[in-house]
Length: 296
Image (cartoon, rainbow, N blue to C red):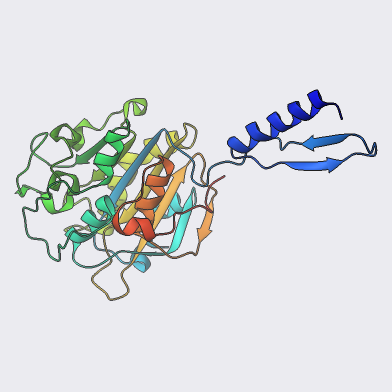
C-alpha cells in the first residue's frame, strides 16, 4: 500500500471514530491491499431527540384500575399505539413530592401536600432545558392567570404544579392550560400538562379523565407520530397502596409499539428526557436507568 493510501485510510478511520461509528479492517485477497468496511449509518443515540415532548400527569390511580378498564378506553387505546410499561412505579405518597421528584430528580425533602413550597437555586428540568438553549413550559388547567403563584383557585392546586416552586424557572414558563397551542409546531421543546382536580381523576371518575385526555390531547398524540414528537402519559402515584404501581405510556414517531416489563419510575422518565437533550442527569435521575429499548 502506498504512503498516500495509508494516510487516506487512517484519516477515514479517525473521522469515523470521532463520529461514534464502528469500523472493521479486512484483509483482501491481494496481500498488499487492505480495505475498510464502513457501516451504512453511524449508530444512533440510545434515546432519540424529539422536536417536542408533552408529558401529562394524572392522579391517584393504581395500574390495575386503568389497565384494561372499560372506564379508560382511551388510555388503553393509547397503550396500543405506543409503549406501555407494565412495571412503572411512583416514588412515594402523597402527590406533591412525586411531582417535584419527576421535575427535579428529588422530592427536595417534601413529604406532604402543604403549600407553598419554594426552592432557591435547585436544579430542575425546566432550568436545564432553558440554560441549554431549549424551551420549557408548564400548562395548568384552571390556573386563574399566567404566572400565578397562589396555592389554590377553584379546581387548580399549586401542589400539582412543580415548576412554580423553583426560583430559577421563569414566570413566563408557568401558563394556563388555555394557552396550550393548537399549532403544535409552536410548542416548547418540553411541556408538562396538569389537568384540574376533576379532570386529573383526583376528585372525579376515571372515565372523566379518560374523556378529557382524548378530547384535549389525542390530536397531539396523532400528530406526534409523524412529526418527531412524543407524548408521555403517567400518574403521580397509585391509590395510596404500598406497591405504588402506575400506568405509564409513551406514544410518538420513534416509539416501538408493545408492552415493556422493565421497572421504571419518575426518575427514569426524567433521566430519559434529559438524555434526549444531552442534559446532565440531576439528583436521583443520575443513578436511574434511561429508557432505551422502546425506540425505533
